[in-house]
Amino acid sequence: MNSLYLVNQTKVNLDEVVYDESLSQQINDFLDEYEHREALAKYHLPVANKLFLFGQTGCGKTMTAKALANRLQKKIFIVNLSTIVSSRLGETAKNLSALFNNVSHKKAVLFFDEFDSLGSIRDYDNNDTSEMKRVVNTILQLIDDFPQDAILIGATNQIQLIDEAILRRFDLKLEFKNPSNEVLDGFYNQLLENYPLEYRKIDRKYSTSFAEAKSHVYDAVKKNIIAHEKAKLAKA
Image (cartoon, rainbow, N blue to C red; front, side):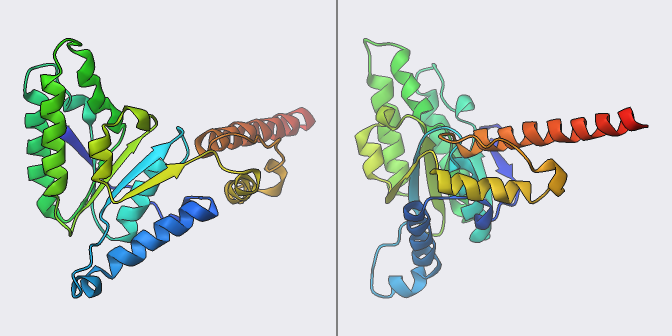
């Protein structure tokens, strides 16, 4: 069973994840609601505990899932979909049921990255969609039965591949886009604060994701350090 997911131990704080103002507000509203769910439950009000994160690669979806788990002091189970999706008839639905039954009672965060991988079942036999229907029906039932004291998060870069009936089961759909220049500047400043002043001079790239911006900073700072070391050796 452990091959179906990873228990992530990495601690990510929300203040380490940079969002635009609208997305940040949506996430804070979700946290407020979930953290006060007992008060809301007294009046039989539904509490959101199923989030779907979609948008471009490298814009913070996985980091957000980890940060939410850390903030709510929950374990996060990161699902390895490649071990769940199977070409063998009935195996995918069986694997999904086993996964949900194993972790749903643990009051944890269950995070499905690359959720669109489940759609690859369509490719096994284009003339027979019975397996896809079986998987979709299984997911719908498992989502409907998901306990309120746990959190389900799905993520994808290709939301158009996700079955509409599945998407409707998620309480919140949060879109992740490439950050604005202003947000990226704040992100660059945050990263560069870790280095001495003489290594912080870099050409900043815009119209890019957080992941690409971070790689750019690391590459530029490494070059600055190496250039500085070479200059010292030349003077020696």
